[in-house]
Length: 172
Image 1 (cartoon, rainbow, N blue to C red):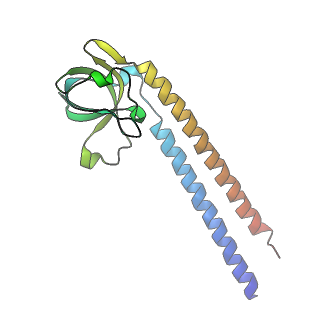
Image 2 (image 1 turned 180 degrees about the vertical axis):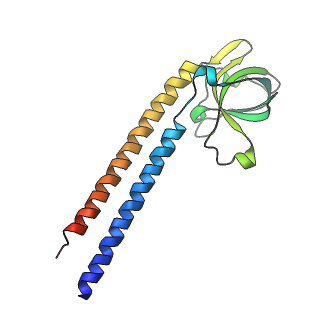
Image 3 (image 1 turned 90 degrees about the horizontal axis):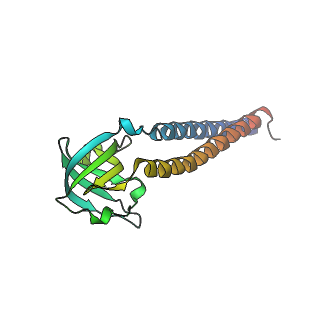
């Protein structure tokens, strides 16, 4: 009788772990779905402002501009820290026109303030970055991340099924 109780407790723990992993996988998928909802070009914020600070990234560092506009002074970053040709010519004091999207999943907003992603940038009447170029890059990355999220979700479903199968057919 003691052996059966100990075995049953282990199976309950396995099933509980499977449920936790499944719930985390669903949460990750929902966060991905929320984070991958990008606005159409006409829904982006138009910002005309004065560059206060330029931070050219590369090697894993963010590429960003601090811009003063009628919205205040905010940080505008390129997606995935990418340095687009022409960005290095932007200097503090220059005027730029940007189409931007607010970072919705910014966990440091209380500390660092509102931050935005750059979708299009014009400097000295020269288009440095277009909406279509960013859309192609972001869509490609989102598709890759979605494949991983789907794989993790499928694996968690299989694990949950195995945990329930072990409960129905106890091992002797």
